[in-house]
Length: 269
Image (tube, rainbow, N blue to C red; front, side):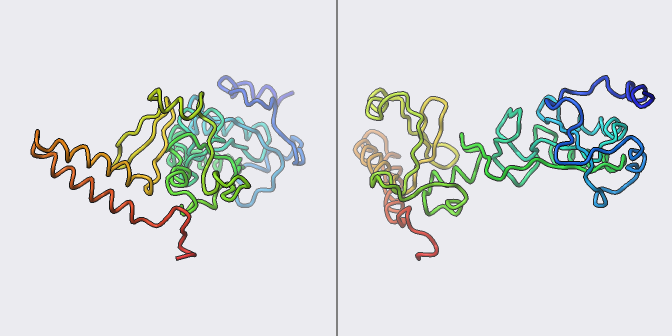
């Protein structure tokens, strides 16, 4: 009973974890007499006894979790069990839709906030367990550079093997392609209605369909640029600079046409 009274002053801002009380699944629950022994221990020396699961999100970032380190220590758990904290899609409330596994989620406070969290836990003799699911990633847009590169370069992408893509399915027309079910109508109808828009942005070409954006494979740009060069060349009589622009586009079209096919890889070169 005394431990409950001691904890009462520490709980006003405790968030809901979705797990209720301290999570002891797969761990041995410590009795209250062991709790003092946890104080002052360095994280590398920890034996996992019990964890407390916290769901990090933009409204409850790393610094908010750090502020509860004293409360967790008073509970008697040995580790904070954190939801995923690698860079996820913008606005993610669960963290499993990772877009960059090389950095701490900026919306949670970034690397500096992670350091503050680990320092706060260590000061209370607590360890940290991270929830990491390697096969969970978001593939919605250019935020995920690996997936964007696969869409742009196909099997020749350096990240092609990072994803479970069947590049050689039974249906021949789908070989070396990624099929994405995003169209609300048939392809020909979407094209005729102007719902598929080609744009030049950030030094490259993209295809837009409402809120979806995809890279255009470099090997398919030669026809597009050659056609644009031809139209500019036909107009150069009206404005002198059209001729120079047409030459530049024609040069780029020839360069893209000379690229190796998307099925070529370094191991085959």
